[in-house]
Structure formats: structure tokens, C-alpha cells
Length: 347
Image 1 (cartoon, rainbow, N blue to C red):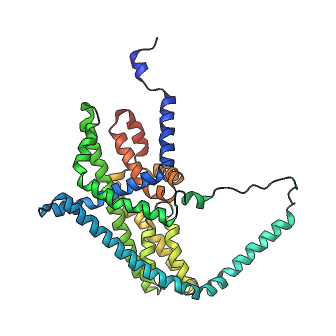
Image 2 (image 1 turned 30 degrees about the vertical axis):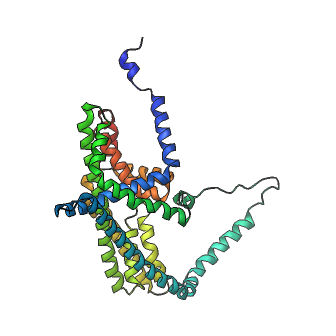
Image 3 (image 1 turned 60 degrees about the horizontal axis):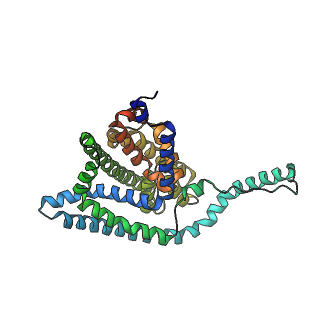
């Protein structure tokens, strides 16, 4: 006969069903959840600014409005400057195209030779066999959920407003969230929310500082090596380097693209070593110093999280995978039955 404790214990099938429903909800609710998560991250970035303005006796609502407006103005200025440099860069790239083609021509000819050899030795498929083209690729996965420019701008337009309301109603939202839990768990919920907030703030500020540092060093070294558009390419390469999983590859693309046909082979190799060296410095020194004490995620858990959220949300999932997993670990740390999973995620 089953005891009351056995009856209260959730069956594994119900747990599996709950996880499945969460995954389905995350997959189909990407546009809403991604906007919400980015708004939450932005509110944590602006929270110190709002606190500093409140120190001068500025009402919180007005302080939040000033902080959001200043950030939007800053982003607009960066986007305008980057757009002008990007237009100049794109207008200049065709001048290098002939040299780039001449450099890549031997590789292209070799690839075509291999293709012709394969077609010559291979047997043609039977007439009744239908060749099926794969419907998905890594490009399709990474661009999952990325709609038209209008859709992106419409979704992004909600972020400043949500961030503003999250800043103005921060204390109310936190206390109201805590009140959703039973009385005996409210203190744990309050502490958990505070730790998640500190982790998210450290994650964003840490990545921003790392991106700025790598960009500054990249601009300086690319300038000494006479890389074309070194100021724009170095800034772009530095911030692309902090992208999880694909950062190293993405960071190499801008300097190599402008360097082909313009730099000597030795300088081009040196550019590659610089990008790799800066990426490894950030990965092994800067990240542990600035973020290690907050995240405490092991590399295996981070890799699985990147693969999972990249599959669910594409490129957006790669950006949000680490803070989401870090928040999940903090929750597991404070739930007795989930502590073994927290240990598995931790270092």
C-alpha cells in the first residue's frame, strides 16, 4: 500500500512531461521571451546609474527615464558612427576583390578538380531514386527566429520600455515575486533573486569590459601592422571575440578580410596570432577574474548549454545561454532536492 509520502512524490513521467512543455514553450515563445530576457539584462546594467541619480534626490521614475534615454542616445551614436565606417568599408572592399580572387583562385581550382574527380569515379544514381536535400544546416540553426528587419525593429522597440518599467517597479516586482512563495520559502526566494541579479549584472559589465579591453588592444596592434580600417576592424573584432562558442572564428573574419591582398603573409599570420592570443587571454584570464566568482559553471555544462539554447533560439540563444544557465544553477543551489544538479553544473 502506498504511503502519503509516496503519493506526494512526483512521478518521473510528470517531471519529463513538465520539462518537455517548458522546452516547447521556450521554442515557440522565443520572440517574447528573448525580448523579456534582454530587457531584464538591460535593467540590471542601468540599475547602478539609476541608483547614482537617486543619490542626488532625483525621483526613481525620472532617474530610470534619464538612464534609458542616455543609453539609447549612446547606442544611436555608436550605431551611426559604425554605420558610416561600415559604408566606407563596404565601398572599399570591391577594390580588394580582384586581389582576393587571385589569392583564392588556386584553392578554388583544386576544389573543382576534386569535385570533377568524384563525379568521374562515382556511379550516377538510379532514375527512380529521389535525392533529398537536407532541410536544415548550421546556418539555418543560427538564424532560427531571425525574421525581417521590421520584425527585429518592432521587437527591439519594446526593450527600452520594458527596461524602464522594470527599473521603476523593481522593488515592487521583487517583493511581489517573493510573496508568490509559501511563507517558509520567502527568505530563500529573496536571497536567490538577489544572487541572480548580482550574477546578471556582473555578467553584462564583465563582458562589456572584456570587449572594450580586447578592442583597444586590437586597434593598437592592427594600427601598428597597418591593417586597413584598423580602428573599425579592431573594435569589431574585439567585441565579436566575446560571442560564446563562435567568438574566435567571428573575430578573425574582419581583419583577415581586409588584410588579404593588402598585408604581407607574415603580417597576416601575425594578425591571426594576435586574435587567437587575445581570445585565449580573455577565456583563461579575464573571464575567470571578472565572472568566475559569480557564474561557477564548468566547461562541460557551458558547452551543453550553448548547444541546447543555440538549437532552441539560434544566435540569440548563444548570447543568452550562459546567463540563463547561471540563473538556473543559483536556483538549484537553494532548492534542497536540486542541489545534486547544481553540483553537476558547478566547477
